[in-house]
Image (tube, rainbow, N blue to C red):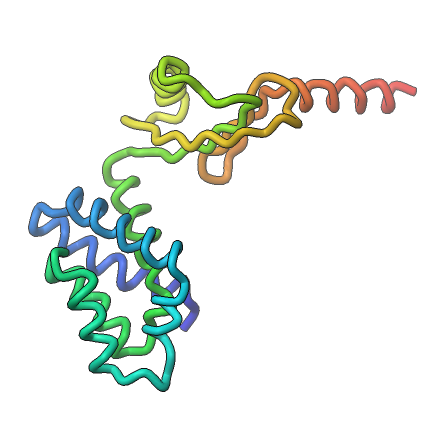
Length: 180
């Protein structure tokens, strides 16, 4: 079974539980922390997936590190360990967050610009752009890219909106070349 199918199944089960128990928002918050832990500290994930480390020690690690988290989340981590699928934990969490975002009409947009967007620009962007993509909320990740020269490039899912000056210059260049 592929990793994405595994991740989707576990995330779906956890998401359904969260919805039934009105804990979806709490789970997103806690799972985001867990995602940060595993992404910033790869050794913890290596420890949990290492075949020579005793399963009891792995379970103790989960209990100690995530003792303040909801039991359903902790138990999901333990099940992933028992079934030797803990390596998929980041994919499970990302899939859970995707389910949550889809259910709540939240889009995640990556905005490439030549400088950091101000709070006012972020608010203006969200207000105008959420109408375009029919979402209730947009979470913005701003990435600085001086090669754009000006303007911005926006990525929402697999769709890219490119209003950068470098893109406009490239289109002019290709029009001139094709005209000759």
